[in-house]
Image (cartoon, rainbow, N blue to C red; front, side):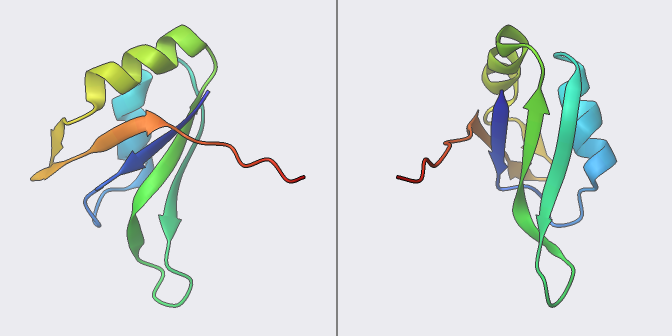
Length: 83
């Protein structure tokens, strides 16, 4: 399941984000979205967790968690379907 994480501290690195979610299950991928011109974090990212139950536990356990002074927002990533 793909998870969207918002309100990330701009200084947070991908490996730190991955470690946070690994407590809930196997992380298949971890990406923090970067600004194309500055290369700095845009403050959000995506995690993919193999098992749906683990992903739901991570969403419930980490939504609202303070990370370096920011309360992160965690939810299932919406998938877009092209017609």
